[in-house]
Length: 174
Image (cartoon, rainbow, N blue to C red; front, side, top):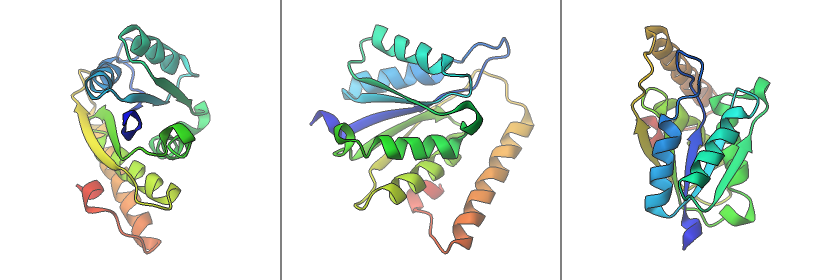
């Protein structure tokens, strides 16, 4: 059934010239087409401009079902994006989804997966869909501080989860 797979894309980051990187959306379009999946484009810390561009690109490249999920600029972060995905998947068109292809940069994947698994588990009374990681290797030069920040945010997520007495799924923990 067509509703069984959804490709999810968290928008960002921008190139050194200030333009949105198209690596994530390009890979998400490839996966959406090969899996005949709906494409859910989530996020955007740039007032919706990136989401609009990515929706247009997906449609131009033949993705039949593209849905933008906009997040207020002042709330745009990985945790909020994950919660918005979980809310979107509660809509009728997405209720039968059993697999989510998460497309993001390799350095962002672990944290994005942790937040998405947490949000999906909290939002669904039944079992959350499987998450399949589709890593994108960014051409954007990363400052080592970005990786340090990611590690710190992952540690904080784990600490917060532990303090609530919850467990992290083994798939999301890796």
